[in-house]
Length: 62
Figure (tube, rainbow, N blue to C red):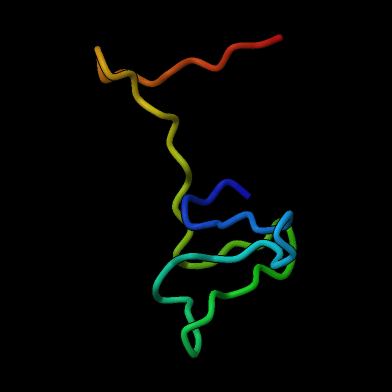
């Protein structure tokens, strides 16, 4: 569930889809069947980088 190609459309009623171009079928996005599903196009999300230093942004806890 940490792939950069994952599109979270649950609130829109379309579910969780894969946005990788190789997984499109008939112009439609591939529906991810279950939450631990991975495929050969899996690419882990990277944390955003700071604009001033280019280093990863550390998450803040509450």
